[in-house]
Image (tube, rainbow, N blue to C red; front, side):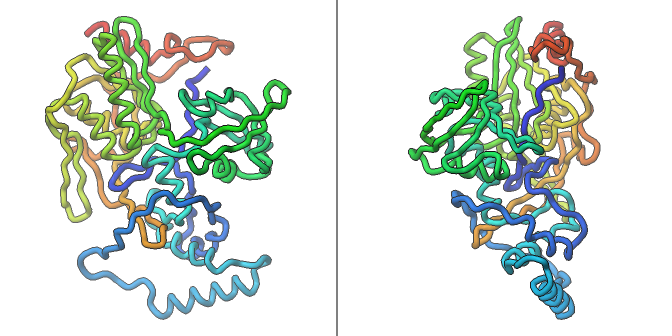
Length: 421
């Protein structure tokens, strides 16, 4: 049995790292294809909770004008033909959205335009790590559209109400759960704090109904436990703003239990907010550089850990091919500063940084603006972090066994390393 894969949404950030996996998938094929596919990419509306209005500043220096007369005329002709001949009625706002998206199609896989609705969802789910809902993770079967509860978070309204992993969601208020995409269904489960949502679920063939009050919550992205030999274990699923306090709490709890060594698990962590990973490294490393960035003109910005707090115990960082972006910043800083051992397989190899700008109408764009470098001066774009100890993951149990860290060969190898130290 393999380690359970975490269901990921993307990490996007203001001057931060981005996941290699995108929730709103970019379309390939250039400006015109972006224009045509805008209709398909329109997102379901949800309440706006966060808007940044910095405006847009052009890059210093001369640039070639994109919308010359011939280009504008061609776009108008294409749009007129679509509105006149497409087999269904076309909303002109959808065509405009497609134009905005198309500007980013021929850049890279990370640069992207977001509608106001997408940006609101992006900030809620991936930047802040907080939301107002019931505290349950959902999964939808792509063929049957069946929706299943995959996780019930500790301390959540869902747990208090009695929801369980494996419950099949049938109705959310008046909405049939299998009649819509999961993102649309989730928008009906979320809502204003203090309001309630009515769920109809099936458990082992029995129909059950729940009225659950929505609350503001931080998504749990950090988990921890104490292994044998006073070895602490912390798994970070992604680097969100709220995850910083969760990481601090995990360290404090493990220290109070007498932690003498530590394993930090970054396997399958796709990245997150740059400031968050720097804050977490600051709790581990003494004063010194953790990462620096450079733009296309060579302008450099350096990020440092302070000497306010640090750890002086043996440390192992677990990584794999899905450890990307901010995870690689974490592993690269530990490796270059000789603060611990990196164990696992070579990481994803994302060494570029995206900046997000919010616009006055609530929309936003994400643009690759910088490369980042480990403290030793390595840009790991398309290369990744090579572990100090290379070891492929193997589950040591049988098909009937559920996951347990004692059957995880990489964790067991990390424990052996730490016991040797």
